[in-house]
Length: 285
Image 1 (cartoon, rainbow, N blue to C red):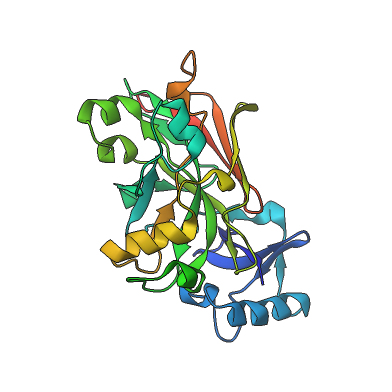
Image 2 (cartoon, helix red, strand yellow):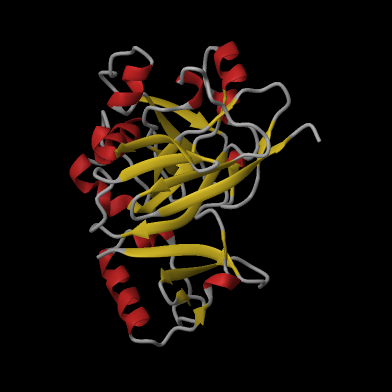
């Protein structure tokens, strides 16, 4: 079972969940049981009932033109990120792939919506990083890799925008990764165990130019191994996001460097999930 969901507004007073389809967004707010929780989305039986409701034609449809997609999780409890988790990204830095996952964090307040601007702080060197994000649906602690699918609500696109001046000056990554607007997320959440997160293409384009192009088969540690590893240390709660790392091609390691500038638009794509597009604006204005 696999469904593509979107958290959206259509001019109403509050965000809603819907199922994304060619003919529009099937609104879920009218269902007697209400909208899904993230725990619901981690349950294939629930997704099967939801699919039947969609295909049965009983749900109202909102035209694509009326929908403004939002980040699937507006304020995660935590964003757990992974460094050097693609073989090609380690190679471009001249590093050996790590023996264990390298975990770090971004501030939850960095999250922003598809289409909203990435604010370029004055004096920063701002970089893009396309990532597959796993959204946790059920409280997870010491979860074996083989059971991880039961705890993941779905997958989305994360742009792990990075301020390289702060990152390299500090010698660690939290501040440089956590400027407001530095975690665009969306445009959809793909739920269901039929989606294979470890075999999808990922790509970044800046003003239409391809900057990153890889596949999650290049992972050093796959999604299931990452959630197992993280949950052995910390409790993962519904709405937490595990950002699984970025492939080679980031701006700071290109020759010459090609970092983001105000006026540009960055588009991050994960196969089967969609394209997350955001303009870059000058934070000094």
